[in-house]
Length: 338
Ligand SMILES: Nc1ncnc2c1ncn2[C@@H]1O[C@H](COP(=O)(O)OP(=O)(O)OP(=O)(O)O)[C@@H](O)[C@H]1O
Image (tube, rainbow, N blue to C red; front, side, top):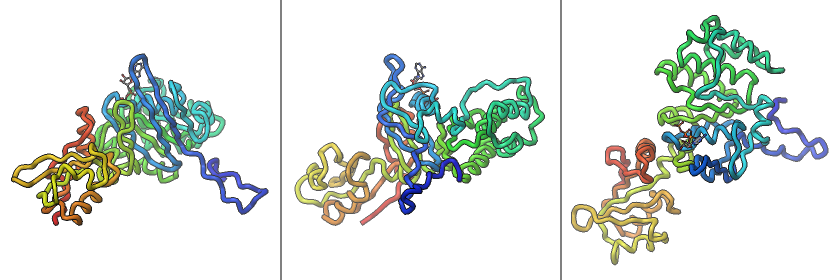
């Protein structure tokens, strides 16, 4: 039985096993540094086995959140649990491995000596050769750390993170400083670790990395979670624009009420060409853009409707520009006509 298997209830053999604790659970977590709210009221639950990207621009709060998950710092308010334990206890038990942006490596040791030294600090580990193999470092085992490139040193940190066979891997911009080939190799190795059932949480600025590798993207900005979902679903869940010819009764301004929404969930703008209007359905509106489109079509309110939505790229770009809403661009737009 692996460490993560639930303990069977021997007194009640038919009782289904309890769900394992989430790999990471943050409830109402804030972390302030003086006047700066680095993390601001984050609620996040990551089930075991997921691969999650924390994506956000500089200063979004990604590292601060991961630091709390590793027990390096404590929340100013709220709570963080890791694998059902306090973060520090989970780390001390070897259940969490981390690859951080910085982290002391002894420059005069070889790659193998470094892994062997750290293995010597743990009662239980997967073995030096296995860790070197999994991180793709066997060919570099005799190289001195000081002669390794930045990317190779990141791989060495990865080998160290794997030593205790952790259930949760936390990676803070793990491919920073790697060239394209290095990144590719790193993510291949990480894919193999995820396939072994490990939970992987990584922070990145690179949208393609998040899209290609993660099951789920948590988009952070100003310490808050701005969007959270599978890469495809995230873009689909963003703000949507319907444009078409108004053919409904009364004024298009009554559309929010027609859709049963609060007035600020829908913005109606006149568009070029007489009776044409553009209707922006906010991402937070309690109907999806598709539902809104279906409604206006079936009620005969709009004709010649085009539905546009921002791609994940555009959502992310708008965040990095510091604005809250993404403007859809016509090239990327799936179009529905009626
Ligand atoms: N020890 C600290 N003292 C003061 N401010 C801090 C400290 N650590 C982080 N901050 C501030 O908190 C905010 C969030 O920083 P954080 O490093 O968590 O962001 P990030 O999303 O990881 O950014 P990056 O992608 O640049 O690493 C920033 O405004 C940062 O300046």
